[in-house]
Image (cartoon, rainbow, N blue to C red; front, side, top):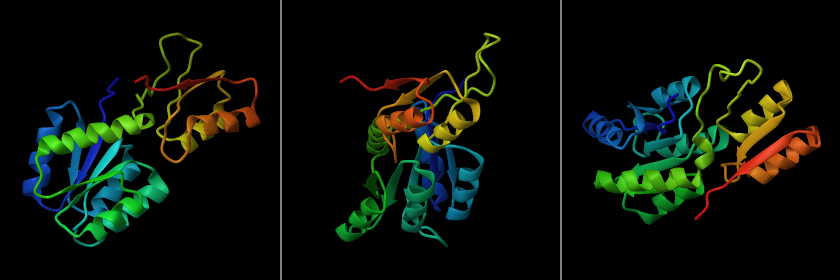
Length: 196
């Protein structure tokens, strides 16, 4: 079972995205790299990612528009890459849903540190995909990468136990707990939280 964080790098400059993807794999990230918004949307339809590293200046649909789409429809954390030094553009990116930004040129070590920081804040995205039931014949495990998908699974499969993170994008674990209790108060819910 591969539980490495899945990162999607979106940058139209091949000489940036490919070396960056290679560098990040050294830190045990599962990294894919694409060159534009169309390819990004296609990959998001095919696979769930834990974080997107997104260049603002892309051909076609720009990074700010894509960031807004991700924030409103996908919920995956986003770190913006920008060559723009104008503070207003950086603020705009954060206001439409970016979790962080890095200004080009940047030290890849800084980006890795920021990726780790955002992933810590969004631990709910780190789900281990278990396509088959566990070894016990009567135990079935269903996984979800966001709260809404998890609630859909609760309604579909009526599990005895739900394990959910306390801190998640778009909905907290307590809100998930409330929704489950409204649906079926007999369900046992375990809330996970980081201890600092």
